[in-house]
Amino acid sequence: MKDLLTRFRAIKPLYWQGALLFLATLAPLPLGDYYRSVLWRTGLYVMLGLSLNIIVGYAGLFQLGHAAFYGVGAYTAGMLNIYFDVPLLLTFPLSVLVAAVLGYLLTRPILHLRGDYLCIVTIAFGEVVRLVLVNNIFGITGGANGLSGIDRLVLFGIVLRAPIYHYYIVLIFLIITIFATQRLQDSRLGRAWRYVREDEVAAEAMGVDTTRVKLLAFVLGSGWAGLAGALYAAKITVISPDQAKFMESVILFCIVVLGGTGSIPGAFVGTLGMVTLPELSRPLRAWRDAWLGVAMVTMMIARPEGLWPSRQIRREIKSEEEAPDPSLAVTGRSD
Amino acid sequence: MALLESRKLTKQFGGLTAVDRVAFELKEREILGLIGPNGAGKTTIFNMITGIYAPTEGEIFFQGRRIAHPPLTWAKRLTTPTWWMSWLPLPAVQERWNGFRSLRPHEITERGIARTFQTIRLFNNITVLENAMSGPHYRTQAGVAGAIFRPSSQRREEQYIVDEARKNLGFMGLEEYEDELAKNLPYGHQRRLEIARALATNPTLIILDEPAAGLNEQESIELMALIEKIRDSGITVLLIEHDMKVVMGICERIIVLDYGKKIAEGTPAEVQGNPRVIEAYLGEEEKEEV
Image (tube, rainbow over all chains, first blue to last red; front, side):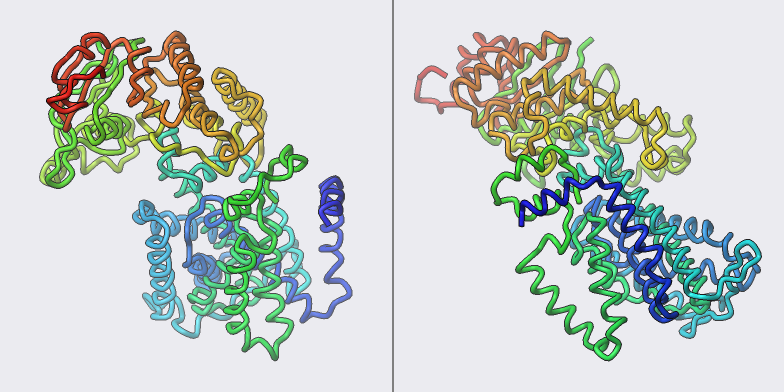
């Protein structure tokens, strides 16, 4: 088994990455609209998972209100389009901006909190955002019914109605997300996040401005979730406060934790388990919460590092284990 | 001018006065030892110098600039126009505001004070090299865009960071372990890595909190040589140490604390002969060698 794994690792990343991309491009072609939508949703949630991964995985901060930014992104796109007739494509960067600024404003005052305390406050502000949307603030959010009648996305004069277009749009953004997060992780900033998650006091003593670095994680993660929200609004054309509800935040958190904190393939595995499978097995969907509970308990006992963990997180959690295989130590990088 | 100077430095935790009106000076390129029985307030002084605690009273100056002072009271803040404007990102305002506020630990590191910790605080689950790469962090710039687009300036910067880290690992004799995880290093090497990491911040002053704790005799001797080497490279050293062989062996001057008060100051020989020091360490009756 280990032999096989080592041999698998020896394959040039470019090859299997290319193969995966090829598969992802062809995958929706033989499928019907319903399954194309499922693929689209999977891609969207992987994107959301990766955006949360910057906060939870890289910087090691709890964020249980991430769906709020997803919702804010969707509402920004929707409201700009409905009230000001801004073309949807233009609302994308604005959604990122609004969600990022909101991420800054909400997290700046609570950055000094640690662990569980941070977690509780993020739950609270997630709920605040949802309640603002439900209560139809200034009469512009449409209350509990949300907003409908968002325009279709128009690209080069083509009205993008079919799910397959949206799948490809999400795929493009997903590739950008993977590329960007991978590079962020392997940079000066990514290292600063690792220092902060390893030991905040020591990081500060080494001259890392921990406040700034943590804030940056929140702003990037929130902004990117805002983009996912805008993509959602562009396909579904109906948005409601349900997007920002607490359960949605929990699902996003589970995608990251079940898949493996800090791991990019982990976000895929987590999304398959949390979003795609429940969607495909509709009759069993009502059972999702039940199996989620069972899965979480089992995971915490059997595999606390996640299904496809990043190497660093595995080391942190299984720290009492023997020294890692020296043949793998040379590459020393996660996932 | 003294490199580091404290005036009436006091820290109270509730009713306990951990540090009581301590004044000391640190000259450039010297090795100053801070000793005293457990609970004498040595680490508290270190934490005030490095900005982890704010003093209750008194000030600390580094290269003539005030780096620590008691936090502003709300009454003082509200009556200070600079406080009201402190959120403005204007250089002139920030410059003025810097005169009022206490510096945060990372800003003190930027000004040239590096430290190690009494209990080792390495970044355990990352490699030795990456640990040392945390030193050049504050003097490099690459941000989000640099990380994603990797222009040549960013790659040069990464190379600079790696070079700096390697240089300091080499200085502490750790170059062959650079791909090991920090937590897998033997204890003595972990201590050295902590010093290497601190040196990587290019400090003017390095503060070592019990660097010889837990080291065996051979390792202590090696450490003494390393500390002298650090001093010879132009860095001032301030250290807390319980191992008297190390303290007496390398310190040029020693300050003795007891119950937060400075009870003696002088060369190792002077301090060793000081009756108050003997009393603090051994109690009044016994007359043994320190």
